[in-house]
Image (cartoon, rainbow, N blue to C red; front, side, top):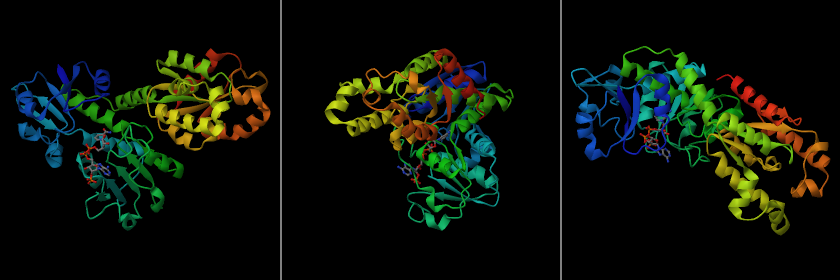
Length: 409
Ligand code: NAP
């Protein structure tokens, strides 16, 4: 079977990887300009298609038959070529979003839910939430309910972000502040790059549910695969693929005192986990064409910390990296959200009597014990967990990976 994803401009897509894990069919990317859409749908070499921006509505008139959900949403993201050549249209985003709400464990019945944005994903989320008996309000920049009268909805229990605000590369943006929603139980952001948008990080700080869009992406693909092949696939497969993709996309960020072994362990981790290794200090020296001791000597620590935050902002919005940070990156609180957006942060602990100090301006000039006492609570605060590096770097790297893989979804 030939299946694939149809869109106008397809940048990096996880869909081929997801579908390769779901069924025994080929899955290609089809970039088609609007003028070529009709010809492609009539004569293209495909048995099944997923449809993405901007064609989910445009393909509807070409469907000979629509599922009830596709008809209701007037939007198709899955097309199946029937044996007589006709096209059947369905929408699996509905199942994807429903599965995501179910994953959060939140009950929305009778509660107010705000859905931000009024595009295709919003229409799907609204339909699912209405089916679950929620009191759904769409917040649109141009609607009656908009970002200037959010105070009317301070009783909201759940907020769903169905706008692209906060998506890579503009990851510092957030569609709204959660401060004015005291009854909020959770936030679902349909964005999955970054894994923890600025909006989701606000929810995490409140200690409420914070769910991104990756589960929806995998769940909608699972249902599409069922339509392509006509065979039922267990929902356990969604969890399995979701976990694998989350691990693959996650950055592993190492923090700890200068000389604690972050680079050595980081290189080993990258090798074992098949990720790219980046030493943030080496990256900084290359980017600014100056050694760190020279930057300290010429411009002082404050200037260096500014450059370091710029480098962290660049690196941490990427996915699938192992990043060894400079020992003092924890002294800037803003570095936390940057590193956390896509990363698990691990504190490498090492006895300070054996820390390497060569070429490290702060370690070699001052009192390491005083530096450690100042930074220790910051390492604690930044890190998801810590490991001890007692000269067995390989063992430490393995410990980190088994800890990461143990984590439940
Ligand atoms: P869309 O049709 O372009 O709609 C996005 C809506 O967001 C717009 O209609 C607009 O609503 C609002 N919006 C756009 N730019 C904005 C801005 N700068 N500030 C505030 N609001 C803005 O896109 P879509 O297909 O619905 O996708 C929306 C988001 O969901 C995207 O991030 C997409 O990646 C994600 N998504 C994820 C999945 C998944 O499987 N996880 C599936 C589908 C979509 P108003 O004009 O009414 O404000």
